[in-house]
Length: 443
Image (tube, rainbow, N blue to C red; front, side, top):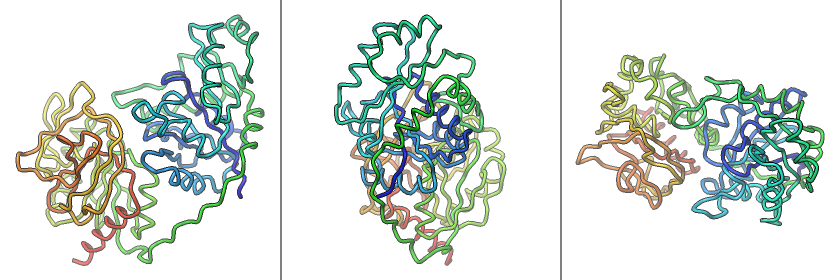
């Protein structure tokens, strides 16, 4: 059994301030010299980018829908090695899960990890009513280890005193309202940490407004966890190289996916489609992100032509969401921009969400690295839509989710696959993709 100090920072609802509070706690503890391992409940890519920048340790997603309960424990144990404390930021409201259930909620993850729970409560527009709200959250699920609250958006000293006088639960902090430190948002959520890195500035506010020693005292009371047995690496290390597109346009990756590709035997080579030529690799993985913000640069980038040529030679290429758009013939956003032209479709940006929610399905057998025996689980969230050719073929059939069209995802051309699903890789998919890269390198 291994002692792993840990604490979950949950919220009553989206927008209550849990992201800034959780990030501020991470920053304040890191400033004290602690090795803080950050986590994010759910499929989000953006909040983890802020966590990683603050803590200097890669933030991991914990999502029972995509990973299973055992997968959450395995990722948690691997990631916390060498850390002093794990801080886990929740998602939405504490009890909000899939389809109105508890599945994949913050409460679900807190139970899996047997982690103490602190709830962020937005006090704006409330005084005495806040006690009814707190009492409801505290009593709703008695299986949770409820430790106390942090009250956010305190308007004045008088506002605090009106609330504090009748509190019946431990309060670890009263945080004043600070509109000046808000992180800007865009259509997919907050800006990435590389663009708006001031989330860590909340560390000073947390240090001044919260009892960090008390929070640490709660975290160390979490029960020890069973040590997990690490999976054996394949005896194929360095058998191929896989290029990972990583820059301002393509930046949405689950770290576990990259780890699994590496674990399956590939060497990872990072490159920028905006600024680099395609490196000498045997396969390519292009994640999601914001290609729509960089269309003129992508149109003229040498990498765009390099990818067209590589796809024509049969190189295995796997792309998700923004990467999918990049591989089409063109993207229309006010005007049209030529892209790689690999996949038989055009793409266009719209003003409303076209797909949002969890996804699962399986391969259709159209590609060697996505056979019918491989399942896919993940998440979709996009404002763009595709206009595929009438004879387009698809490598993924969805049981849940919209995909590209009518529950079909994974547009195929030669050895290239592009899907709207942000998949959480299974070990089998990672192995199949590495095998495809290894076969290509032998040519």
